Image (cartoon, rainbow, N blue to C red; front, side, top):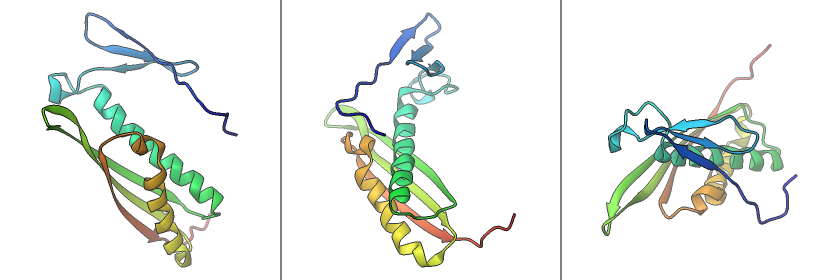
Length: 150
């Protein structure tokens, strides 16, 4: 059950001489981050840029799951690829676009229209993308698969 708003999320960050940042929040394992290759880092750790794009993917997936549950849509899997585009606009470097590619598998072909509507609604209502200034583009595909027998 959702707690009343406002919510506050606290994270600590500590950086050492090796330029790796350690992020921590309560009850969660620490996360080590570093600069991406595009900014001169090794590209072998999560970075602020990849974490932001991951937040878009994660939020979209969780938003879809909640909408599907409320709508009683039975589905098998949702596979996402999200590409965030960083560019310089008016002398400011920022994310200008988040392109979400969603492939949803359902068992019942008669529910494809409902599934497509829920994929679109997840893009429209995702908390993270609604909080960002970059444009969100959604390409979605619903695939009907044969029911698997155990």
